[in-house]
Amino acid sequence: MVKFEENVDLSKLCTIKIGGVAKKVYFPENKEDIKELIKLSLDTDKKLIPIGVGSNIVFRDGVLDYIFVSTSNLKKLDISKEDGNFIITAETGVSFKTLVNIVKKYNLEGFENLSGIPASIGGAVVMNAGAYGTEIFDLVEEVEWIDNKGVSHISKKENISYGYRCTQFQNEGFVYKVKIKLKKSEKNISEIIKNHLLERNKKQPLDLPTSGSTFKNPEGISAGYLLEKAGLKGFRIGDIGFSEKHANFTVNYGKGTFKQLKNLLEIAERRVGDYFEINLEKEIRIVE
Picture (spheres, one colour):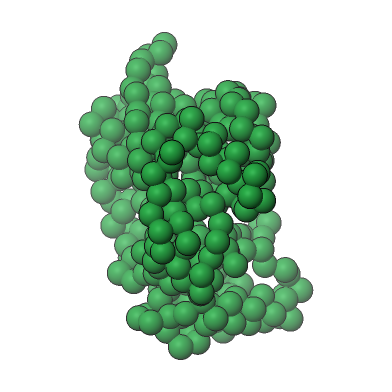
């Protein structure tokens, strides 16, 4: 039997701190637990929803009855060397903070642009998270995943479908383990990451609960630029608004609600559509 908790406050499982109550949240500890939960999802016809750090997911108010799966107990990792490179194999719940510590310890190159993203490795792979021109799939070697029927697969990067902020895993299966490759650097990686995080703190509202980047960047243009030009930088409805630091960051100023968030996003999509004839696509995942 997979461990679970009942009547869980979902606002504590997402970084913007809004949402209702989950009837149950499951805490798998191994691959067999995940397979059991996939079977439960099939048997009950309830959607399975993985939850990692919760930085790009938002839950509606009220009681939600899904197969919520926390990855917080899936944090095993292994470090090995292969042809002079470092191979890190991490379970889905391993956080980027943990990876940053490894990168700094061994002075490894390639991860520095991703260092400030509040994510788990599994969640990052599912959406092909990225920042400053680097995407996680620039580093991925292979992914071990379990499909929607409970069958395990190990797929090399070249056999995985992925693009800008999207992968096949958004609709197909559960990412269980990720293998990334990094190389030893001659640069001072710790110093680069330190400066990178200082710069990030200047530009992003990291002092407030936030869901991070709200919309994907349309091709050739920044969503933040479009939102700012549409007069939405600093715009808020109640306690939910677009940050005054970065127009594409949605923040919770205190007691924000899901309804306020939904209204905010609808206004943003409509304004940008009216002004620029561009349809914004959400980067955050909304669970209703």
